[in-house]
Length: 165
Image (tube, rainbow, N blue to C red; front, side, top):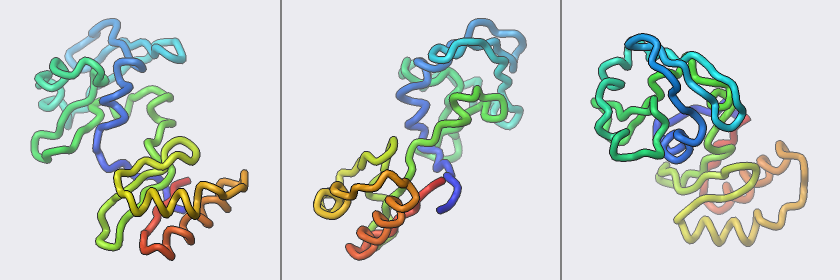
């Protein structure tokens, strides 16, 4: 298994951001006192120097109220998003990873993800069928063994699996 690596899709911060973080007060041009809505408590968020220009552009955030107040599109990379407070983000954000497994087709395109503990998210009908026939019935509580078996099952069907710690 490898360590999870974010691909900057931004989905985690687009759909739960405003439910997690609320800006209570602007302290300086880069510093904010924020409240963690779910776990309670406050933290100081600091916009990183390298993201200041992106942070100043609030166009997308104004259109999408569900976004985290610190999520911004990367101007030079279409479809990529960045946490402008990555180094000072709260623990709930630090401990989150959007998936435990990514599944790729033979051409190397991502066609599925395992979210939560063992829930498949895919639009690929063949992967869905393979999952339902070979994976859904696996009955082990050992996550490492389960991921290994899933990798073997999907591998035999032509998929490549990246499992994360």
